Amino acid sequence: MPVFKPGEEEGLVDLILERAFEPPAGLDCGFCRYGSCIALATAILRGEASIKDCVVLGSKVRVLVDGRPVELNPFVQDLFRRVVAAMVSALKGVPEGARRVSVEIQG
Image 1 (cartoon, rainbow, N blue to C red):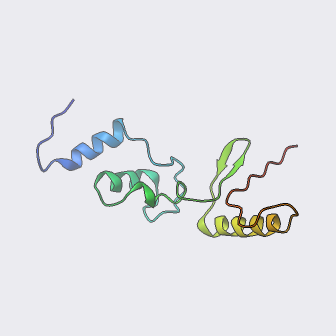
Image 2 (cartoon, rainbow, N blue to C red):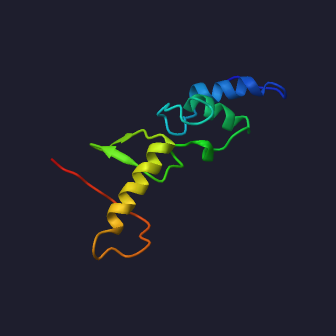
């Protein structure tokens, strides 16, 4: 294991990324301003960003197909949220202001 001296933070960041750091979402969707999970992870390690900058982890809409996440950009997330909320609010027996909705389609 290499030993790093003050001023050699760049080498330490490279070592961590190479050996130990799992990128925030690992999807490389490119939706955040960093363009990739590795670039975001690097910015986090340098103190220039936080995990909150990950668009996927911060999303309030998740779509899973056969258990695997489908990447949605912020516009599509908002569209899904609004359309589903409108449909659900029109159903009888649904409490006003419901905060969580799950939909499963099988077959």
